[in-house]
Length: 112
Length: 197
Image 1 (cartoon, rainbow over the protein chains, first blue to last red):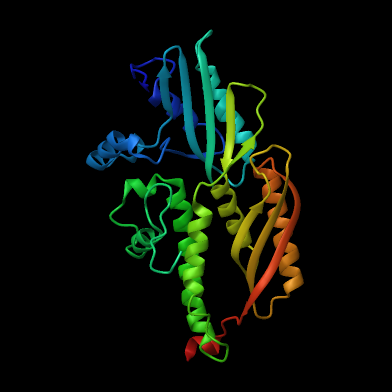
Image 2 (cartoon, rainbow over the protein chains, first blue to last red; image 1 turned 135 degrees about the vertical axis):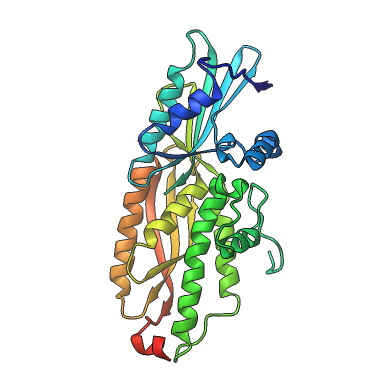
């Protein structure tokens, strides 16, 4: 299992999806997909470059014909969290190519 | 857990490390902390506790007994327990390919945040009791708090209950069946004479 290629314009490009989620009303932050050593390469890149957005991203992983899209977000206390989470999921679903076997997981980790 | 045992979050950071980071003014910026929701929830709670601790040192020296020796450690432990991601509270979505949830830690931090808006009231602990991972299952909320002297306890408790009810209805899909609030402490409010002495 590994991340999909990040070529520009690919509908499941992590950077593209992350930017899309950031733009959704009620989303205040996108967090690293997992607080584990699996993020070590992104963590090192963030430390070296000082760019924490390398950590804060939508995670896209493929396993054969199945793709799993996962994102952890922070939401605004001024906007209903279920509505914000739904908008995030719907936005990610729009990027799944027709006939593609995918799942979308949205976890709200902070409301502030 | 004893007082000397590190309180480690899911991300590997300890509450003690976060407290030191906060004391250093969050500099130099640590991306492992600033991009971690559990760490950010903990920092928010620690900042409030730090301010409260300073206020109480000033307030309680006059003629009220000092807080118990383990009071600060208890609050640190509570923050550690609350900010961990904990259980996943499901949110509804009609598409079976979608899994939406909010973490228990985010909800407990939310309760602490809305509680801090009640004048004269400070949240101690909060718990979600019940099978929060089962949609529709009955869930009770239990909260302890302290109230500053001269603030009516019934009014503070009523306001807190209403705010928690509204917040949970807005931000979760939980079936809340009870919100139990226990006022455990009273603290004297700061006066000008206190500040001068």
